[in-house]
Image (cartoon, rainbow, N blue to C red; front, side):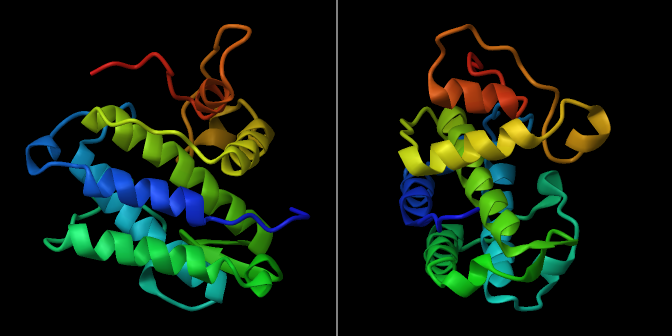
Amino acid sequence: MSDLIDLTPSTQAMTDLVSGTRDDQLDASTPIGMTVAQVLGHVHDLAGAFRDAATKGESLAASSPPDPAASALPDDWREVIPLLLTELASAWQDPAAWEGMTRAGGLDMPGDVAGAVALDELVLHAWDLAKGTGQAFEPDPAALDAAEGFCAQIPDESEARQGLFGPRVAVPQGSSQLDRVLGLAGRDPAWRV
């Protein structure tokens, strides 16, 4: 990745979705087969893991493979997730975050790849959360460009996509960029509760 991407608009969009999630929506379904609470728990975990990946810090979250469906939602999630998202965006403001090697989700990867993964996770899970809670979501254009480039690089082979994405979903010609990204990531843009 030649240019640094500001994660702040994407973390702010996620924060807005977290703030707009009602308690009675926590058991609702999302497009990825997880409940809203499980998606929120995963966002909590990934925000900490990729914050630590940016600072090249060691933590259990950065060093362990993720199991999104098993992510526990802390009782104080309404306060903690926005704080972690702010720290995540701030950590990736440092150009050194995008350089060298780091670790996230149990995998060693170049810093620029970790930043792209973090951004992709924010875009995709914001859409998942928006769909599961009936909220509006308008992704940051730069983040959407980066997510499309990242998702397009993942081969459409089960072993390459395992644990990351489902099989690609074909979207009609002329679809929006968001719908294209969703299809590349194995999500059905037409998903309805």
